[in-house]
Each structure stands twice: as C-alpha cells, then as structure tokens.
Image 1 (cartoon, rainbow, N blue to C red):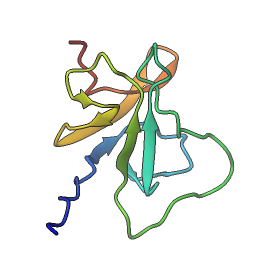
Image 2 (cartoon, helix red, strand yellow):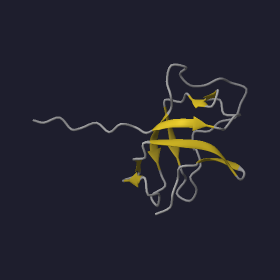
Image 3 (cartoon, helix red, strand yellow):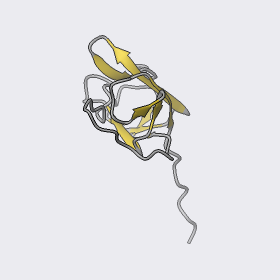
Length: 100
C-alpha cells in the first residue's frame, strides 16, 4: 500500500505582533497557529500576556485556516508557501490572506 503524502504546513515567515507571547524577534514560536474565525483572517492563536510561550527551536506554522474564501485555502488548510502575521486595524491578522 502506498504511503499518503504528508502536507507541509506553511511557515510563518514573519510576525509583527510584538505583544504576542509566541513572538520573539519577529519570529513565531508557536508550533502551529489557527487563522480565521469564518469572517476575518485573525490569528486565533495570538495571546498577549506577561508570559513567554512557544518552543524556541521552532518557527511557527499554520495548522488550520478557517478562511474558506482565501485563494490559498483548500478544504480549510492553508497552501501558501509562507504567511506573514501582523496588525490590521485593531487585531492581529494573517496578512497573506487574499479573498478569492
């Protein structure tokens, strides 16, 4: 039986959300983030607190994306080669989001 190919999760190439516990020097260190709430490409994993989170040896990736109308989205999975996360108006969003 042939092995099913494993999808590579898109890397977060930059995170400008300075106040996020997973952000260290513009690099996300959450193992995987979730993007979107069906209406906005918000970084659902963003958390602002007096804590340090994440795994220092890991560069974050997109685990799931709820933005079905994004051109990079297939079956609620992100297929962009990489994404950028940052401030958009009053929230932290996936800046790579592009409506179909």
